[in-house]
Amino acid sequence: MKKKVLAIICLALAGIAVFTLASCMGKEEKVEDLAYITANKKLVIGITDFEPIDFQDASGKWVGFDAELAEKVCEKLGVSAQFQLINWDTKIEELNGKTIDCIWNGFTVDADRQKKVSFSKEYMINKQVIVIRKDDASKYTDIASLADAALVAESASVGEKAIKATETLKDNTYVGQASQSDALKEVIAKTADAAVIDFTMAAYLINKEDGDFTSLMILDAKIADDEYYAIGFRKGSDLTEKVNSLLADLEADGTIKAIAEKYGLSDSLVTK
Image (cartoon, rainbow, N blue to C red; front, side, top):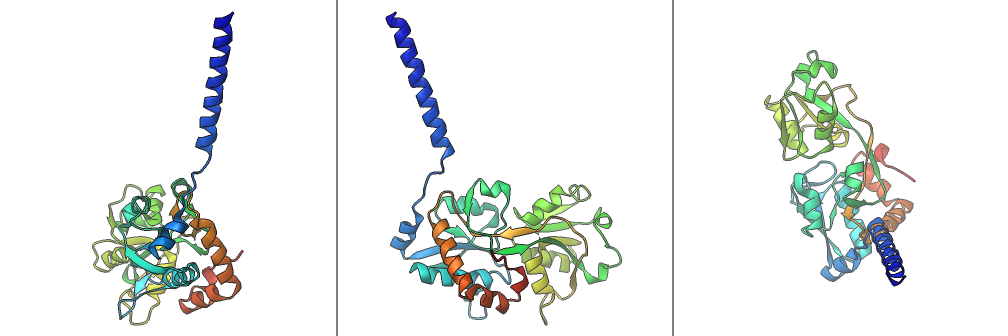
């Protein structure tokens, strides 16, 4: 009888342990980053050279839509904004290793990334586009015509994913680049035939008077669905909720709209 009672108790305890473990696994561990950045008196922001989102002006200061918005958020947080160039291929590793405190650089939300980072509210809509040389406008007219083209995109970017997910293009010659601007330079140099990059950047650079990319054009062909930018924080970070609150304030007082107008991005804003 005692053995039966003991067995029942053991089974009950085992069940409680399994339930407790499952409950813990279902909860996202809270990360207290707000206190961490307050103590450090700075928010280290992971970026790449991504005009008009994050880029340097003639004096070397980081400017652009995301850069200026980040400065405004940091003012409200009472910390300084420290912009740090990162390897986009290892951005999440740098975030989790605390080399940076967030990824704020036209960071596209997708299902895979949502498993690895805590995203802020979405603030800008974007899409992937195919950029070719204007001289090749008659040669490349749609995705099918690119079947034998040499392609480039930023490594580990949504553009790279779009190429690999497109049946006609997935087996093409492809070389990942360090940045989206590098991908465009490869097309200009004729070491690649087409680049897949963010519309936000492509439209800005191609239409920039006296710029380096006026010889390029955007192909009228859809390669992927629309996407949204958000800020990426460490999984479970309490900064996510805090920054969301500050973004709402900056939207309400017109700050976000004013910055967007400065960079020609008003039509890309997400308003909620």
